[in-house]
Image 1 (cartoon, rainbow, N blue to C red):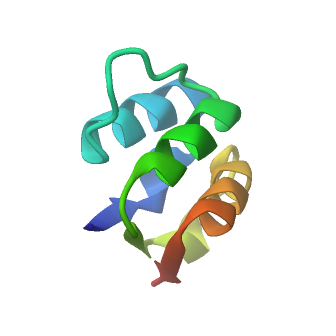
Image 2: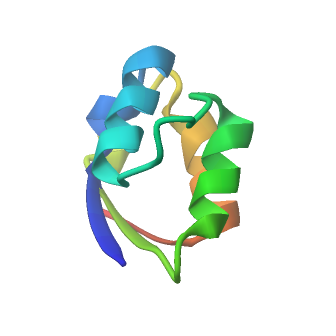
Length: 77
């Protein structure tokens, strides 16, 4: 699975989790927190995430990025 994520959409907690749920096709029971993010990512088969606009992202993004890097392969652009 390869998905392109826009880091600028990951700067606010609530909207970040809504965006991730939609982009990664998480189940309805997705808990919209970092622990649930990790759990759902590790359930995916070999995810590769390409993250664009990573240099411009602030706020909640560094926390999300840490989980993404722990759970799957990430390419920052």
